Length: 311
Image (cartoon, rainbow, N blue to C red; front, side, top):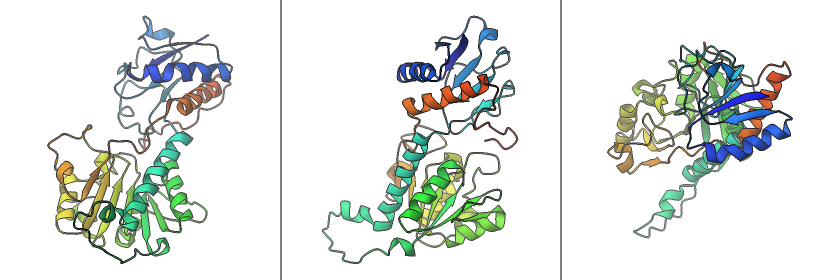
């Protein structure tokens, strides 16, 4: 029997207890699953982890074969010096679908100019149509699973989509840029920019004053990736001078976003409460069970984190 510790927070346990039990049974795994910290850490075989859970020191967990995160982002654990066990991030179709829905919904909202029709207190009859999608250039920073899925969905709506990543990536039918030169090019070309990068030392403040200076006037920024990708002060300056027409933000450096933060009251900032790609327990539980079953069969777990890259 495998001892599995659900160290992902007591607030998450009611949502995950039954789906995990069902997923382990379906995978043919004989497990003892508990949300209670173990009396003897050396008896634990696997950890299910989320930030804000019940484990910070991994050193006593000497038998653990895998730490499976319930989050796609792992920046809050990857630098933990006591973590020497393999770490896997959550890559789940449910996460991809949720992100695609958020990204396409807000891209279409800004593309069609829906805000001015929904909130139109002066009853202005503005008959001017928006451009067609094929005339709108969408840049996506981050070509991982979520970025690639969002890019494909936007392509399906006939938008011109260009992706960017720090290192070279090739995706059939999609223009992908990389490196510093590629970043400057996409910043200059895009009408809307979607941020789906992980938070690493190399990506923090990737949208800074220099980056905003390269953008077209009237840009739209969508950030469902990580709050630290944007220099908040630089964004507020870009909004003030008209470089950025609107910013729709789902993630922030401090969450929940403090009540006195200027984003709340800004007329051209939309705040959504980190809902773009939340982990859904039933589908995530199946991923957890599949990865543990792989390890038990002697196979490599899926979606292992590269500690040197931070994701």
